[in-house]
Amino acid sequence: MRKLQNDRFLRALKREPVDRTPVWMMRQAGRYLPEYRATRAKAGDFMSLCRNPELCCEVTLQPLDRYGLDAAILFSDILTIPDAMGLGLRFVEGEGPVFDRPVRDEHAIAQLPVPDPQTELRYVMDAVSTIRRALGTRLPLIGFAGSPWTLATYMVEGAGGSDYARIKGMAYDAPELLDALLAKLVASVSIYLEAQIAAGADAVMVFDTWGGVLAPADYIRFSLEPMAKIVAHLKRVAPTVPVILFTKNGGQHLEVMAETGCDALGLDWTTDLANARTRVGSRVALQGNLDPAWLFASPLKIEAAVRRVLESFGQGSGHVFNLGHGILQHTPPEHAGVMIEAVRNLSPAYHPG
Ligand code: CP3
Image (cartoon, helix red, strand yellow):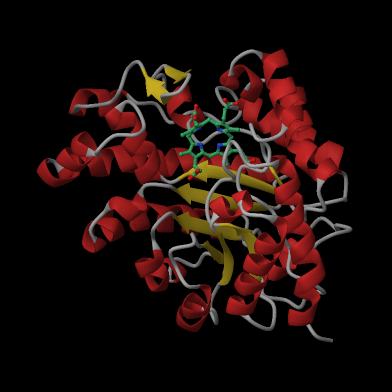
């Protein structure tokens, strides 16, 4: 294990004592920061930025230089895997991600390769090792991937912002077909995260953005079980590296999520943190869960909201402060600073002696 100057994020994930609650923000490097927009303009489009390890490193460090954050997160995207599978990823201004060749039938699924992290996804591993070098021993680095269900949703629908008719049609009408697609994604995500760890990631997070749109039994089969296989793989190859699972709108599934053997659960703001701690807090750490829209309120209101989140978790370790989802594009950067400062100032009271 790497010795870090600031390891309170990793300690909190293991529910070990900390002096204060660690804090980072989902999408902390992104369009709300003018310095990000400047680097992005240099790179051209978003995927060109993702493919450039030096510029990925630059934008990863930008929020760290601006704020007192306790973790860095790799700058990349969850859609690098389907892109490497050959689906033809494009980001359309105002529409989000689009695939030119969505996956809709048995033949297309059978043809899908499992991308090699050291060749097709080399650029991601190079970004991880470049960022690791730049961080030195300053802070931990979080690696990440999308959950198989969330990646399958984009791959089958062909675009975001849908009603899930195609992917749910496949789940209900031809579940064995979806199982085959999910199996390819389990294999791909498992070796991808393993390679990120080998390249220097200190913890990994699985983003299950769309698990919350499923009925409970379908969530378990199509979203949770594939994630559980990834956790099992990572616990075999890298037992000390913390794994965080985040299902957006997954508040009703916390018990089964905790049973996967992961170390922490990400929560959005629709789940009560105190209630979540009662249900699973003896097994996993919890990460979250301020509504990102709070950052549009005034500083005093933001501080009060931070205090309520800290109070809701209560005393002791096992909490990583975060937003309940990615920071919103038009957030005033100084309001993110108010939130982070409030966590730094208010949270020591929750970690006595
Ligand atoms: O947290 C971080 O700082 C790390 C970077 C990160 C990005 N995407 C950068 C990004 C992470 C962790 C992601 C994950 C991601 N990507 C998810 C899961 C997380 C979640 O929010 O639940 C999803 C669903 C995606 C797919 C994706 N990528 C979408 C829907 C978009 C927005 C498209 C749009 O035009 O609005 C992206 C692009 C993207 N990923 C941006 C960033 C900073 C914006 C790109 C730009 O500069 O235009």
